[in-house]
Image (cartoon, rainbow, N blue to C red; front, top):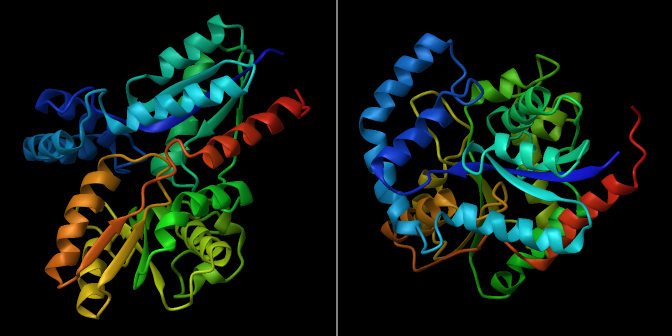
Length: 341
């Protein structure tokens, strides 16, 4: 079999214009794994969101947009190019929503003769609204466009030593500075998503310490995987106990999402005397609107409003050499594996 690699990230509008942002938000929010309600109700809810949200989001995107375009897309393309230089099989990039599309990436791989493709979701943790929807969509497109193509999926790598090492390497210089607190801000998801993904049907969120209690449910539990990433990072980086915590950002709507909320925690920690704050966002491998604007700009304002003194956002791994090493090793294992038919 001829092999190929497909990197998939979440996506971005084609521009920060209101029409492009509206188109992106419509595709994103109409995904049944993002807003998991019946189609008619989802269409109504999304229609209400699209009245004002595109204009607000467009303003936010304008703050982070670069001359080359969306920071998420630009960085992801650089990662694709860097990985391509290291491997001798074709590497394509796609976004779950908008462009470059999954359809175009699968077509490109098929044209290049790839019949067995390693899909690497650029989401270290399992969540139905990120990792799962990317995997399902690629599989759907491949069956339609290239039915002869076999898709092999990279499992979540939230606890993989290479990923943890890359996270710590990217943060190393920041951790050398004096700081009072390190906050791990993971992307939030609704609590109902955690319960829906619970393969046991009775473990997740049933008790306060569910994530610390071993269970098969953790294989698809975003919350447990986030806490595991943070714990492994702390262990490898040597951050003292009591000098770090975990929170969740980017909630939408009124339903309960994973707590504590980042926008509540930042001013709270400041008022408790944590004056020099570091924030890292391990759920994102590339900087984007949620890291640059939500944390770097609004998060800083929230912390300073609580009487904080110094706020530093640790960049995502982006194009860090150790992150490219991690991806190269994933590809190497795939190329050397004997995958049964």
